[in-house]
Image (cartoon, rainbow, N blue to C red; front, top):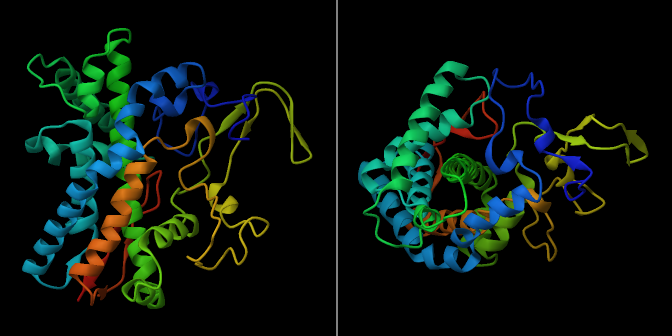
Amino acid sequence: MLTDPRFSRAATAGRDIPRVSAEAHAVGLVALDPPQHTRHRALIAKAFTPRRAERLRPWIAGLVAELAAELIAIGPPADLVTSFANPLTHRAMAELIGVPRHDHARFRHWADVGLSTTTHTPEYQAELLGQMWDYLTDLIRKPARAPGTDLISLLAGTQDHAEADLVILVMTVLVAGYEATAAQIGNIWVALLDQPELTARLRSAEMAVPAMVEELLRWIPLEAGPAPPRYALEAVELGGVVVAAGEPVLVDITSADRDERVFSSADRVCPGRTVNPHLAFGHGPHRCIGAPLARVILQESVAGLLRALPGLCRAGPVAWRSGALVRGLTALPVSW
């Protein structure tokens, strides 16, 4: 269904979405269908290639080491969310986008508000998103920008797209990329710490970090609910049921990633799977364009903390966030 052109994301515009605050409707790439979606996605694709993600790996590994050293200097107990996952992700995303380092801290709050469903009022969301819009517009217009390979540099030289479209693209990348990746760092680490046999396999080099990360991406539910609705553009038979034109369908990716017809022992973490076609990054035209970078960040966050803090363990109960589109922690107390 995620690849079927008879189902539309663009058709959600103006529809009632009672699960979120009023007027908090999707914008940007997530709310477009091909060919508009294809044209806009191509604009930012160069910034998210696997090759570019790998070029950033040494820098990300260094950032992980730096944040781990700060944890060690502070001493236990520490919060892995506020002292590691959040700063790692927002600094990595800001670097990729091309945000000056002195402005990195501003972006975390903007991203939090941007993916809120019920936590903030529509008026507050509009105010904060307006601030981000103005900031990014100025950044794209900045005449003194040195040519580079960051996202803003790539977009600044674009001639055949409206400035507003470029701003929306950057906002989409920032909000979606930061929030989902930061959440998954915490989610992955709470899974590892709650199943010490998994970290033991990693420390003994019995299991490679990339394979473990892929399996945890499959096993851990990220979305707080079903994926954004798709509306049928015509009558479609789906699983033996006819979906009438104009009716929405919700896709539960979490259930798909626990499908026993695809994954044996689907409810267990089995990092030795030789085939793992999970949908953690989606599928089809709306598959996460930042998946290569997210994988590098997640892999380095696991490998780096294992090296720096071999005795890492839970130091108290976790706290889960509410009122957001993604499922993540607000606190993960740890010791070592």
